[in-house]
Length: 81
Image: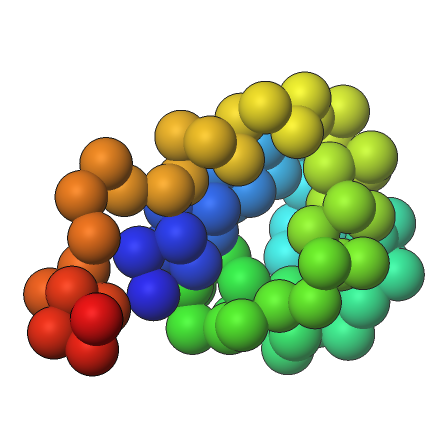
């Protein structure tokens, strides 16, 4: 969930810098408006293909995805191991 929230924040900032509506960004990314909105809200386990499409539309270096991954394991993951 940490990745989804961090990625969503980056995507929202990119969209806002371009002064695009959610609808415009979703159309450019080839996604439904609701699906795109869920990504921005961090409420979606999005497919890799959507992440790549968003990266292309916003001209994101995929290295930025590293900033979405927490340094420490989430407690739920640590408990399972």
